[in-house]
Length: 167
Ligand code: T46
Image 1 (cartoon, rainbow, N blue to C red):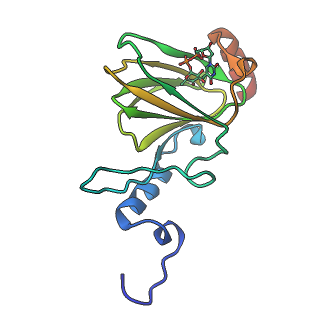
Image 2 (image 1 turned 180 degrees about the vertical axis):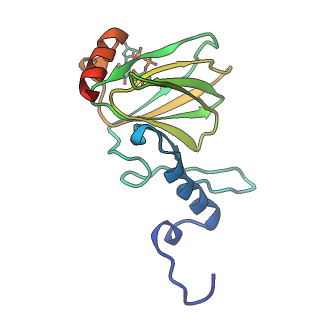
């Protein structure tokens, strides 16, 4: 950087390789941002990579809960529900798995396999998870504490609500 040049925005905080990752984020919005990939910074080092998450900065909501999925059998199917209010970002900290998301009109699938790339899933998105690799570990950052009343666990009920909201 030429001396005297002032860095602004994310350039001020992150080295150039990391800034590129953050700029890519804007280009990955889908379904109006209701489901999108979230790239975290990575500090590369011969001793190993380091990724961090700062509240109010990297995740588009205040984090109220963190939970993990582990010891998952490779043929397990998880998810199969949507949330009225809950927003989440889902990461594969180790290994990989597939997430199918459904907004009531269309389905898309994502494969998570990079611990610095998570999937943001807003409220009113049905999700199903499968194809877990051996030893996969999923970490989920959630906008609210656990509340069973927030779940739609019946797909027909979810579809009815999703259609009425988009009408
Ligand atoms: C989601 C996917 C990615 C709790 O007591 N506290 C919790 O924070 C959670 C997440 C679950 N539970 C209880 C509720 C059930 O009795 O743990 C049991 C298993 O939960 P569930 O069947 O909902 O787990 P998954 O893996 O199908 O879904 C979870 C989240 O519930 C869901 O929001 O998006 O992970």
